[in-house]
Length: 137
Image (cartoon, rainbow, N blue to C red; front, side, top):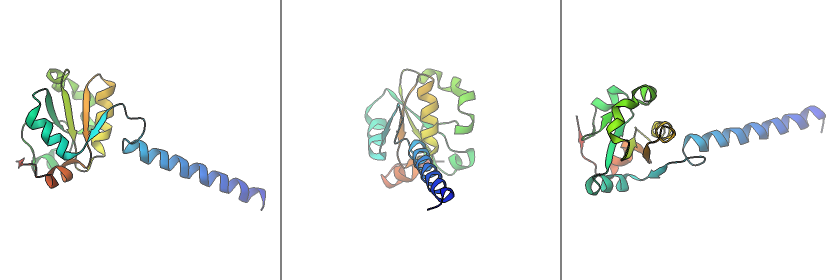
């Protein structure tokens, strides 16, 4: 095996490890200082725990197609600039959802970093609908 091939193989495996790390991080599987819950747990909390609030981090267009009642809309891209809208929820658990659960991981990281208690909904609104959540427009 030539030296070039040897280094190419090493670089390949380093890149693969980096890609795997990034994927696991973006899914909230590693280095997450917040809890992720499934859709049924989220709906149970919303019905039975008055110390929770609800944050939708999808786009305005997605929100208009249907969202959970009483959800505050702050798209993830503007979350950091609009944390003041959640000031009254600082001492509550904030159930965070998006379409499929990826943007809500990013939002949960921001919230946790700023002293909030986020609960990321795995699978997002897709799984919430599968769990028979009622959507409003």
